[in-house]
Length: 333
Image: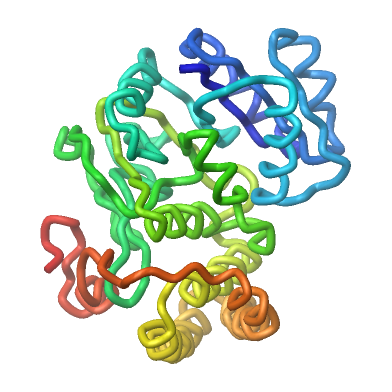
């Protein structure tokens, strides 16, 4: 299968220097691209000098994750014929033979649209990494969680998720997708800018009866927080706003509106908690996220492609985690 590894970059020269060599070394089966989101550092000069074999696509401005990838991929597909895209964060180290198990999975099952490998922590490689871990699911409140990561608890990798199985969503840190599925879904929703857009895309694919898979036979190591730090209030804002928007877009009305009301109420409780344990900036970010959601609600409703809510994997995960202290996936009911 003709495969393109596509890395989105914004002022990431340091990350490219640290992580790109592993991608070049272990990805002989693929063509490597870097989409640059109008970096103001010397990323482009660095790539030209150090990695002349890599194709560079330059966006005219910083268009965020969603639009940045969409526009860059459009340019790539005009020039190159590809079957599978691997959207790879610039802070990911890949391992030897990481590509063959995933490409084989695409070959053997035409219903599969997206595949994610096992994602471990670059700094602590015996443990799973926050963004994606061992495959993503949703609970009955629409909260995303992963095998290997429930909220802030990360599991040690003991081979418990070395399997291959269908999941609900795949991490944008290392996101393999068939070109035809990316085109049919019109790529990422550009209104998201960043965060949750991969869950929205996977949800739309699920609603279209396409399959998302996790492949534990392939491993990558993710640094995490390379572009927007985890304690940045803007990340809180985008996560909360986009999470609500994803529910509005993808759930049927009879289920979506009661669930969104519940989530808005729970967000209020979370804001109070953040006020005491994080900062006023994070509390205010949640308030702003609700106004941002209301402002964008007509757009979300316009882009609706709802399906039946039969994809919820566990129930009341926040309550299980915080009240009943069920910290690990195997403990969830």
